[in-house]
Image 1: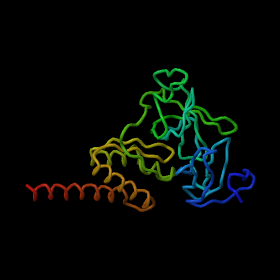
Image 2 (image 1 turned 180 degrees about the vertical axis):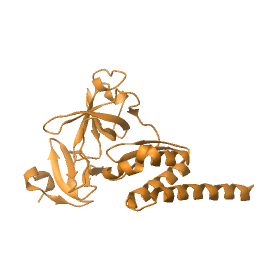
Image 3 (image 1 turned 90 degrees about the vertical axis):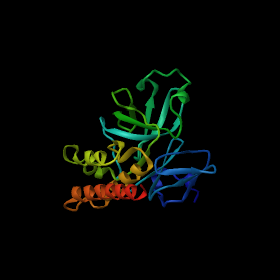
Length: 237
């Protein structure tokens, strides 16, 4: 059965690496493109919406809500808007009216292009799950450089910590900048070694969420790593 001929009612089950379609379609959430073909990047249900192919995960998917701050990846642009993947079964739309400065019709590619990462906020969701984004509020912007990692969106509160305690710990022990999206996407910028340290610490939080004393574990990892670096510098000197 050709996957691109499957209707959404057929609920086709797909696995990572499965061929889903060709250049007649656009790569959406849960997919990736290679050599003019589109493949599944996760386990889930094939969903074809207009000319986009998506894979909807079985459970635990991020469900967008108005007011959520999200980190997304631009996947396409039209004359007056951009399509943005927000690590959800649904693709979001960012209109030129919702960015600063105002962009002229047909010049969207001069401001954002496919592959760019943005920090945005969900401004509206209608009854058919059409998602509108905005970048007009303070701090919302294109995220240059840095690296984005993904965790289950349900783990976001643990990464932030009570009163921001965990994310403060991560920042204080590394020379990095971070934004945590409520969709489970985390942007980290800094020196490569610091980005690696923060990424490992976040993976530790993800894997050990339910363990007691997690904050102390993360602190010991970060401080122990710092002590090792200081010792190496002394030996080299």
